[in-house]
Length: 157
Image (cartoon, rainbow, N blue to C red; front, side, top):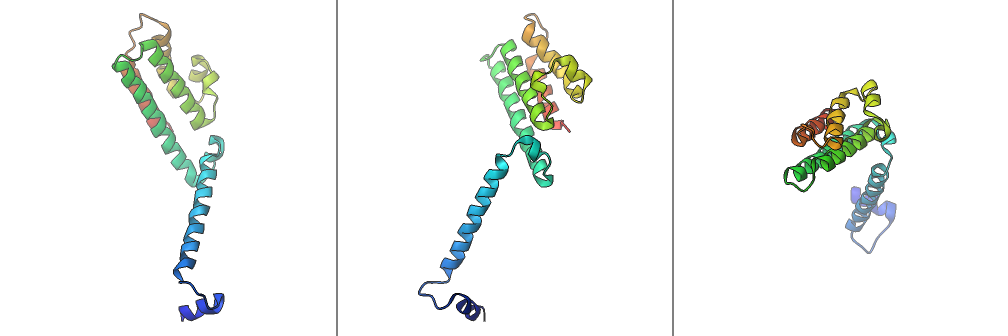
């Protein structure tokens, strides 16, 4: 019966019925591709409002920024970066993460302002990073501070 229905709907064809299914599959692939590109290029503030995408977006952000902090800490451990440069890069990465995750412009905020607002859990890490970045005799261990920054990123609400 389905073959009869298909023949009735599209008439007799000189080609195999698999071509129709292939065309439908390709159309679905193209629609999926365009949807994925559209969602992938949405700004973070819009992604945070879409229920299912919000979870994926948060997971990808955490993974990406934690990996970047780990790479910087590893470069410092190998001696490729000085403590001040590593602290600056970790601070910049952490500030970018907080901006992407919350929408708060952390890149432009002083540590005291961060400590007084919704980003307060990040303030101790920023204080340590500032000390390592601007104090040549700082006792701050970049490895430990990098690990603390990674943990902050991984557990951010």
